[in-house]
Length: 94
Image 1 (cartoon, rainbow, N blue to C red):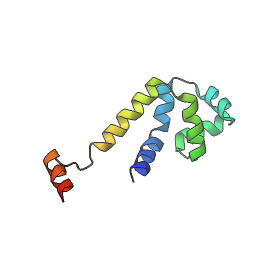
Image 2: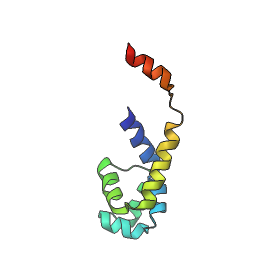
Image 3: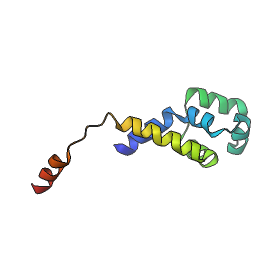
Image 4: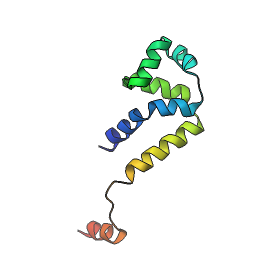
């Protein structure tokens, strides 16, 4: 379930990742083999295929994008339930 949750966070932030990357849409659309209008519509609607997301991330991968995504994943994890170290140790003893 963690993988699915992480992928959902990624999809929700693709448009923001594009902005953070600093690349222009016309450059990205050319690199992906898409018309600029198609790229723009996908960015606005968020209807990327998994292969398109993978291709896009391989193009825009830089430190700013990684930092942004890590922050979003950490924010998503804040709402997850945690247990104390003592509880964890007691569960291991069972």
